[in-house]
Amino acid sequence: MTRLLIMGPPGAGKGTQAELVAKRFGVPAISTGDIFRANIAASTPMGVEVQKYLDAGEYVPDSITNEMVRDRLNESDAAEGFLLDGYPRTLSQVEFLDGVLAESGTELDHVIELTVDVDEVVARLHKRAKEEGRTDDSEEVIRRRQEVYFEETAPLIAVYSDRGLVFKVDGMGMVEEVAARVADAVSRPPHG
Image (cartoon, rainbow, N blue to C red; front, side, top):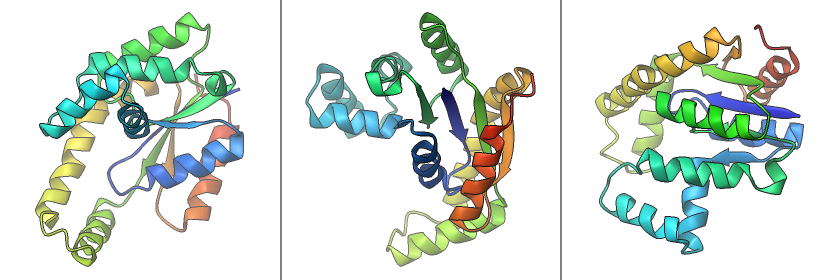
């Protein structure tokens, strides 16, 4: 069984790596964005609620996000493992996830932290924004998103580091190279 969490700043290639790693280990890649979209598309009661927040440009509250993640982790394809991408984002979500996993007598096996050269990622994201005509993605805005990520996730990384679960993986380079480094990290036992 493989229960993973992948973390990394915007532009680190989390989504790409999540798909590759999930496929390699035969577990579903679970992202909150995908869960939101699936519930919205199915017009579930929670999906209708999520749509209201998104339409208003607001964050979806933890209470809704947590319940959607709980429901998704209780689906049969996640029974043998999963890879979480984009969740948890807060310490209260870490506590909630711990509780959900404890209910099923499991816990996370590994937390993969993709590390990147921030200047290189900012340059790459800025170039992509210009190519796609997204003028709102200035270098300053992109840098701020990076800062916010590090401010918000530092406490989570600390919690998982204390448990011996964090494996820092160089997220720079070709997609296949990074995927091989992630797979190598996942094959190692936790440090704890």
